[in-house]
View 1: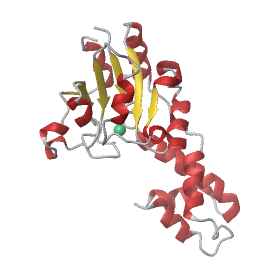
View 2: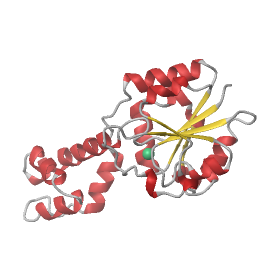
View 3: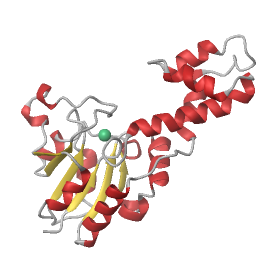
View 4: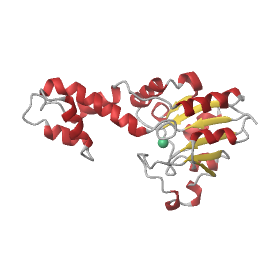
Length: 222
Ligand SMILES: [Mg+2]
């Protein structure tokens, strides 16, 4: 039965790690000419740290870029044009789900500027339409509240609702409470930003179904 299928963004439609790499490259490229240091070295400094910008800031002491603050680095990171893409498997699956009559939407948490830049870079407007992209920053409530899911329900009344995500901390609880079908994409390669330990969560946080590949969505009855 045609449904509203809403997707999480990071580590569901693409690997967030790719965005982190892309953002750090942008910061390195912007600061290298100021510091007079090779961008590759700045990138390495960030990649070898758990707190990339803090470490970079410390490493730039004594260079002409010493005055560049962490807030400025964060701004470059958020505003950069991400070098990320959907895999052909994800793009093909979204195309087929839509061809079957489903309505597709996006529900994502995070900074407004950063998330919309990702949506543009991934070409998601082509699949979801601009009005079906819900960024929690835009509506003032994130996925730890029912608000973004209620907003998605208003996009498609009278249709079953499905949420596809990766993070048991916030992706499945509220949609389950509201009667949605919930599906978790397993972190098959262990590359996600948030560790996916569903065993550590109470049952109300768990998805109804787990899939190991995005393309498995085509096997569901929607
Ligand atoms: Mg996610």
